[in-house]
Length: 145
Image 1: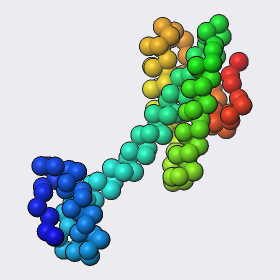
Image 2: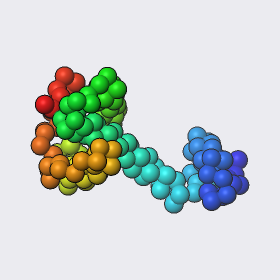
Image 3: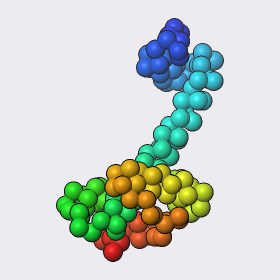
């Protein structure tokens, strides 16, 4: 089987063809440049999911702390689900765990979280840096008061 579908023409058909070429050992026929890009994108996708989940978690922790009168089951469910999703990501992709120790990564996530929390609540007086550590944030029982 020779690859007949171009990457730009139909990425799904292209991916199927590339997978078949790999399985058949026909490495000389692979679209190596695009294949390498796609493999790199898998890693970037995992990183984006971690950022997205952590941002959503922090938004709800901020709302929990800043709006005690509005606390409810929905926020608790979101907090619990995001923590579970993050734990699952870290278990399935342990190479993401070092991100939790990177100050620049946290700064970006915190900026995203405070911006989103401001949009959702109308509040703007959030701390400049995250006041909680990763162990608190990921602790299934912990909530800011």
